[in-house]
Image 1 (spheres, rainbow, N blue to C red):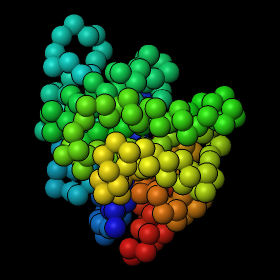
Image 2 (cartoon, helix red, strand yellow; image 1 turned 120 degrees about the vertical axis):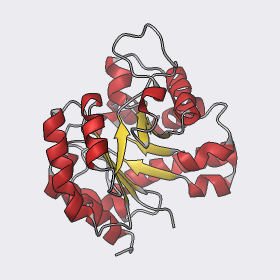
Image 3 (cartoon, helix red, strand yellow; image 1 turned 120 degrees about the horizontal axis):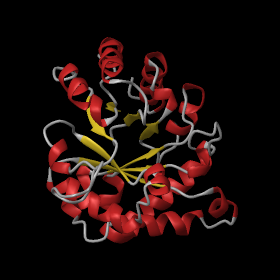
Image 4 (cartoon, one colour; image 1 turned 180 degrees about the vertical axis):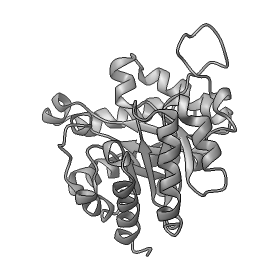
Length: 256
């Protein structure tokens, strides 16, 4: 069975001190919940403190993005080499970076390859707008995002990559796809990966759902066969809710 992975994307929340206090409060209640992988993705400025606080913990640290270049005149950007040794995971292609920073499918591909070169584990985010969803084009759109992101990525690297399906219309809106809807699209993502790499590789890859995930609906998503975890925004900012998400994921997969 694929190990569930629950990743908290903190976005632009928590100061460095708040972040350290938060993970220190998180360590004890998560200590026994080892059947799922647990990841926190703080803002860049909080990464050193969080990494230090979690160095003797099994909770992994992730970054929210990385550039594809090794260095250069890219004001505000972070190179993957700057993250190596500090984090285990990095989110690539989140819809907010696509929307607000102009990140394209081609850039996602370059970021993904750069992250892999530096030993980082990418969480590659894909998802459709409400307009595309209502037009019935979700499967084709998301499949094309997957093909573009993985172009030129060798099969040997797949074990290091997680995919997150996040319908844009469900992020931070309080709306969410149903478990069945999410499972259908994630199944289509897995089928696309099977076309690219073969069924055996596709079956081993972990694919998360994201978009207004909370303890109240987590079991609905995690009980679906294709869904291997969650990329969580708002609900990851409170200790009790994040711990509940991890616990529910483990229980829903029959791993408790």
